[in-house]
Image (cartoon, rainbow, N blue to C red; front, side, top):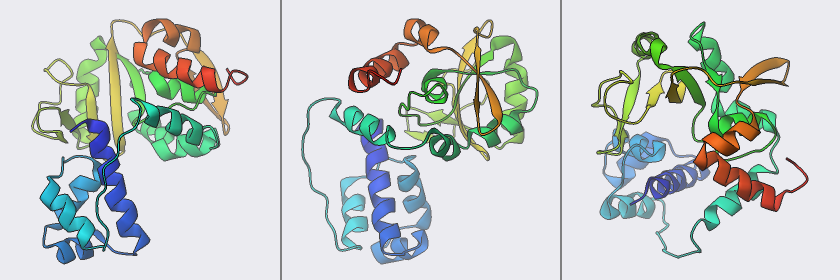
Length: 232
């Protein structure tokens, strides 16, 4: 099961639960599972087995249906939905300002889809993406330790069980007490432009650079521009 599907399933369980004004504990009791299991599924940290998923949904008097759609159709739908939202709302949803404030003087630059969002192209962003120099790796590790960081474990599709240090094998993706963070480790910080939102300045990698150096973001930007040619 893909990571995208895991997130969709978790979001569906949460939306159904919240629409019924149930707490995670109440849903867990109804389904005969632990509250921790419900929490991990809703966060997308755990791939739910079909029996468990069916139990959770049945406890809310709904059931899972399966359909197919053209590959990547979800991206077009998400891009269309994001285009209707104010950028300030999307920034708040990421907890970007809080994360940057907590990083203090650790040198970083906003990059990836997060940088595109700040420049007016609302792309799907799962977590703030920051460019950080390899020579600041030890400082990043100390910050992660102080922020109770857990590293993404691709093998188990959950956070935890891996060393925090960026030099160790694994994705540069961590969950902290201030939210999730994704790092692009580099020898030198890329050139930036300054953008402002809500009275705050951000140093971001320009769109023209993302088009060349970041294949994933470039692909999303191309899809976005095809649908909104006047916006970028």
